[in-house]
Image (cartoon, rainbow, N blue to C red; front, side, top):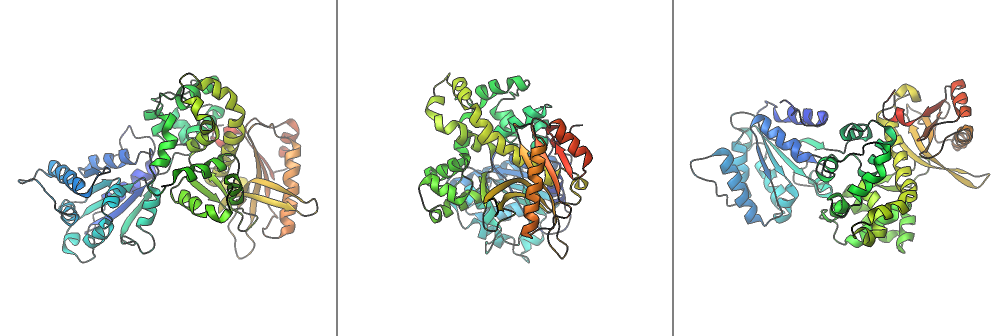
Length: 490
């Protein structure tokens, strides 16, 4: 299977699909593909079907009887049998799909599967029965059935616990947003400052460039403000209401006002459960359910505090939703009036830096440390990278650590490979390094981690002064990471 030339990246996903689809072993197999909307799942799966003559069916929100008529017509057009198909139930549909793979491995895609299962909750059990191990229709087929969906809460339950399809799938593929480096390449942005600003607004969702911004990319750093005004804050563009639609499209989010308020609390800097509850004027126990639902939907991410047990913080997983709640939602009535975007953005730029850009830069630093940094930089391979708060009992103050790199524990304390501070808008100096040294001493005294080789890392969006450079040159334990390094530029 040759990947289409027009498909950007997705090498891992295409390779996984190709391996699953072209597997020559006898017996029909089942795969599950999921991911948030606008990530290119449909393009990926449709291209895979076209490459080897497979069958693709995109479900819609419809009654069960209408979906049966639609798939009957689609399969008739694909197979061209002597007599058109008129399926009475999904048992007949599954047998017809299994029959497609009697001669060779054949991909069969059912896209937006949650729509079908919502109309017919028995459908996963029907597929389970069709894929019964010794059933003749399965053993005599090499159909590679792929169920795809964007409702992450539903897709996450499809193979979990006591679900009917648990243990049946030979492929579980999650199509993720592009990371910050790939997103910059996809948007055609070489300037790392501009790349990170754009990434803080739209993240790594491919559709936002081609379909939603209609290919409009900032011409350069000086064009960023105008780009925000003419694309994201412009009520005439699809991007303007996209954040609202993302929430409305999740089937498990019924009382949207409560979920919107939870996201607004996080966007306003209330990262803990207590902070969110205080923002909403509720008890912490009252918001456990909405937080859990937002996590399952992939809209909210829970980060464990690496220095304190049971003190998690939360962050919005989709940058565009974070941008919407921090910048757009508070002034929505003004933005809906054409021509107001420039004035609103001028008044919101400081809030953008503090509530959107700064936290996003910290997260990019953590992801870089985990996925891109040379392990030699930290003296070992990171097992996980997080952040947390270190308490200073003598001074009765707490210190936030933006980046904490934890190594692999070998029958002892986990090694703390590095701790780091990330500042988007500050030129970092010797004071930042001394602060990290002090925090390292506090962590050593706490005794949870092995800090004998902990390195000190400063991440800056604007650079470092001479004293910091001299200190880093003199001590290998000190590392200075700028934007060019984060983006893999020399």
